[in-house]
Length: 360
Length: 267
Image 1 (tube, one colour):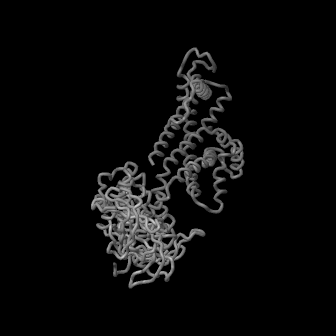
Image 2 (cartoon, helix red, strand yellow):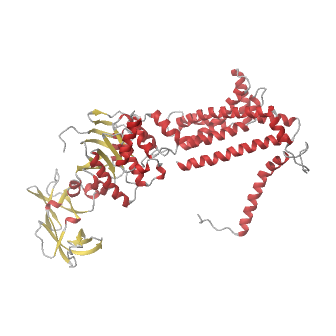
Image 3 (tube, rainbow over the protein chains, first blue to last red):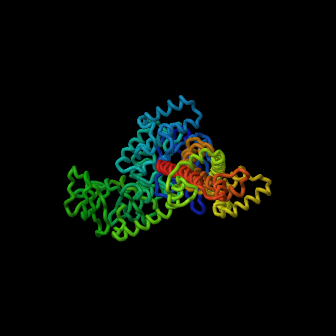
């Protein structure tokens, strides 16, 4: 992605709170202009990483290098980094314009320069008409934009976003996600986004780092994470999936051969495949399973019985019992194309590329 | 709102009776005091046969009473300024921090409010003599300030504990060092508490008798003057002074209460 030096270099970062290890030896580079999302359940270390980058926590060990400079011990006010807080942290006694100008004043800009820059950023975020209002007079979405404007105004090298959409209602959230992504594209700023919402991460990010128990589970593009999860944790955390527990039989070229419910299946493998005869788990996304009345041409195919259907609007979720009937596969059927799943017995097929063998 | 059990009629009347008897109990003495200030006779008591404003005219024409009033106000303002400064500083030091001796400092900061007035007044008197401080305005201001610090500490700490940590972090993030973020974020946030505490301190100081009596020089504060006048017999003039003081303190108190409540609601 980048052949230059990275904007942020995180080296062996650990943070201990008493006996708890919040962050365990994290090493990572962030390129300029990237939209990186740290995704994980609460307590996975994503917020700790963010707070260390912002200067609000000192790491127990490790270093943070920003633009070639070691900033590990710098206080927040010295860093060329700004943050959008989870509760927005707008100053209630200042107007929108004063909030936005706060960071510029402290940079020692001239009055006319401050005015020009705040007007520019407020018009960019369509906040001009609210300039003289106070934060309490704004809606949640407007406050969120003010927080963003205030953090972007001083032109930071890195923008940190701490679950900034958590307080918005579901409908607004979708809209703000698109907005944030487009703002990031237009400003070409590096965004470091923290969330526990996998959908949010998939929609906005160039790159997602999935965290669990203070460690990186997987680091890749949204597509890689979704279709080729490296671990069971990632497969289960992101989207809905079918987990197939079987036995390792061997490899065939770059494919893994596994036994599952008296069938032989082919899948793609991560690095470090378990040995022959070992139990393994593979993940297939719901939308990658196809139905047919006859045996399909795909490399993997099993027969099953439809046991449940749920209408979801544009598509239908179907549950199919396979084997002795105690293994259920879930799949989506497009309602529009009118694929028939009315038959009791049905074939399900999928390609090896769509099945990822997981590290447990 | 309305999930309280409905009161029976008898119960309601009973509660209303208790309430109104309490109101009478509190206000009848005040009303009597105010009425006597308008009585056209030196003798305090019923019946009131004719009314006059003569006592009020007398009060406002009496240079000694007026200068005593000014003296009391000056003491109240000075001691309040000191208590606010010291109390806010202590509150900021104590709130949300853990350090060795925190409990002891907190205890010492709050103690003056708990010591009985007469004991602290005598203690101050002895201490002042030992330090060589002359009785008078300085000594009174000092005693009032010490006595009022605990109220400032408690009120400001309570407000400070509701300041979200992210407010200070946001200020730091945007380039403010700890001092600037204190001045530009923490202090404005504390304004309602500081104002409320100031009014309270002003009224406490204005009202104080014991400390002012023990530490005063030749010039009396208003309560001390009233006390001195009482010794030569009760006069409606005292009622007139007291009525003016009552109205002033009530107006200031009610205004401050409403003002701080509105400010608290705004932020």
